[in-house]
Length: 139
Image (cartoon, rainbow, N blue to C red):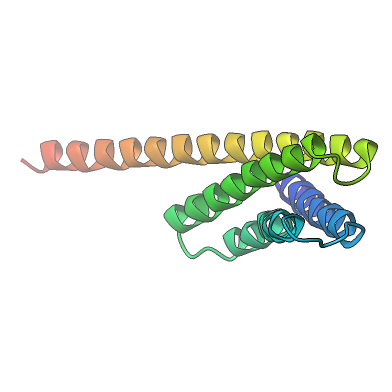
């Protein structure tokens, strides 16, 4: 992941979290809706927070784990947004935009996970090759 791509997804998840916050701030927290609002706000803002955690990961495994958590939160956000749309909670145009953005973010995060896992496996294969080559030439 290049710096520009990294910054782009971080900016998008930040904007997504802000969009979720704006949406829920305009909803009336009446009984039954409060739970939906809390779940949506938690999941929607967690996408970017976990991405920031991934940036500070101390290993490739930790990086992948944090991205996967961010991916799950993005998918959960889309679920709660769909609930809001089905119940007519919030402005339809805003909900449609956030659902689309959440879906795109989830796809990007999934691609990052797949790509990183492939590179990690390739790195292990190269390492194993060098060890095997060393063992064979040492004899």
